Length: 169
Image 1 (cartoon, rainbow, N blue to C red):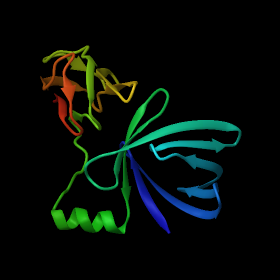
Image 2: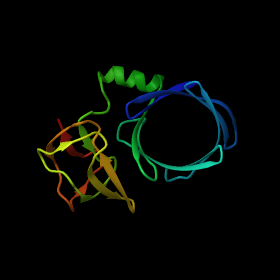
Image 3: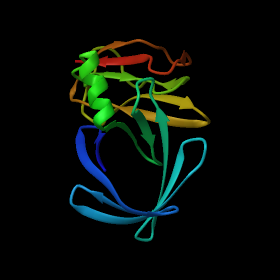
């Protein structure tokens, strides 16, 4: 069975072709990968593929089938799009699950640094806020080119999961 995975702004078709314990053959769009996949109870995945090792932490959002994936250097917004999620989205009337101009905290944490202020121009990929959560600091980057409209938190403040942090125009 194939599902679609939305990774930031890219949508990929993903299908498990074969599985034996933690060894998988998967197809992503038209490319086939042989991977060794392990995960623990805390949502951390270890992936071995073609001699390369990748560690990814998946943190679920409050909405079903939405996650933030943390790697060593980056983080990504992920949504699993399958028949169930399409049904739920159509039933709720939601047209867009991820906002293009708002940065929200995927989990509770503490604001460490805000290198921007309202009125600042930012480019897509510029760091706009750093949050510490689960003994790890994560930089959140602007998803678009634009101007900082509003900052909803201050450095040192505690934030809740899915709390709005920064709005960009």
